[in-house]
Length: 112
Length: 114
Image (tube, rainbow over all chains, first blue to last red; front, side, top):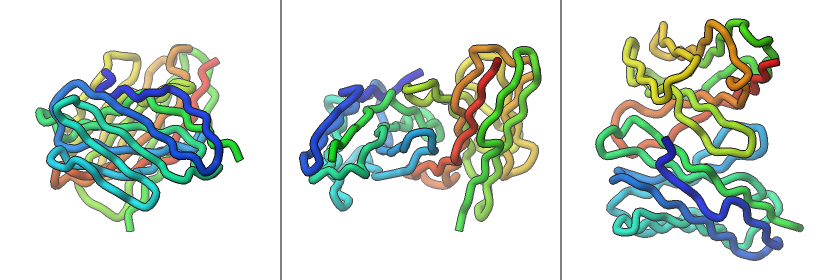
């Protein structure tokens, strides 16, 4: 079953613009993670935010978490063509922290 | 350092044939192990996860099974493949201890059932 749902499903922006992707989930969580997937490859972990954190930064990435709304956002600032990829949020569950459930992903295209 | 190996990278199998995909992790002990399937342009569906040998949980009833014959080896199998089994299969591992841990993915196996 899908725990996280991202929106938009697809996003096309110009290089240099910011890209914002959102994720909503259904159950209580211990943490929420964001991953990136280049076409036809495995996923690479980008950032993890714990349930008691509200915002986290890593380079050009900024993640927010609102547990009251069960939602998170990933902001990529000053996007580059190399940022073109699919981005997924993933959550574990308080009842079963070993399960890592992924959303459907946002396909980001950064036009040079 | 830890590494994860998943093979083969691509596989074309006829309907009704058996399947065996293997995943091994090096450089760590007692990892959590996962098998995911990804349909074209879609998200990841969790198929199986394992927190130890002989501790495998199935998430979705289907034509597949998983086994963990060794601590760092995770195998995905099918006795008879269906057309609907086509997809991109991803193996992943995470640290056993602690709850706030990331997953590390293999490069995936693209399975086409014909």
